[in-house]
Image: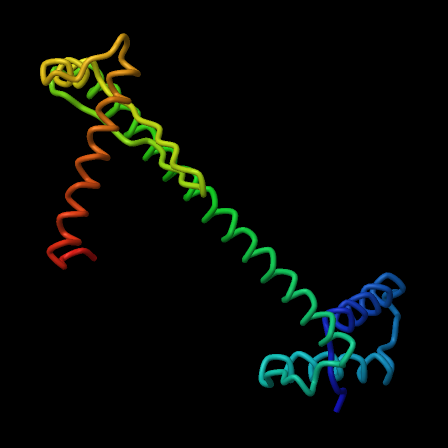
Length: 180
């Protein structure tokens, strides 16, 4: 039995065979060593084709190297998957932003009153609200007696009226016991 053979051993046999073939002359006699080498090579091929390697057949240093290489490959694959997921998420956000921009542009040009809350940030002293609206919304507010020197002042007055109305409704619900 020859034990564990790897590709390097097979290359070794091929190298010896090639070297002997170079030295062969027409009168070259096949020696017992040549026959033994041929038998060993045939047995190696037979064993390699019939027997599956187990972990015990692999030297510990080669096994450790193999495991290290596999871990690195898995890490690369995971990183690749994470990069791919990040790219897909970036593309999804870009698509959503493009759709939103298209919608906002369409609504700003619309004759239908439109207003959107773009951002809402609360801290201990109050809230900051960022709104977007179209001219039809300002016209609608002015037609309902909410006036101001410019569009921003009209929106501020509308927000104040809206907050007062919400506060009054919450107070009424609280008095009725329906406040959540």
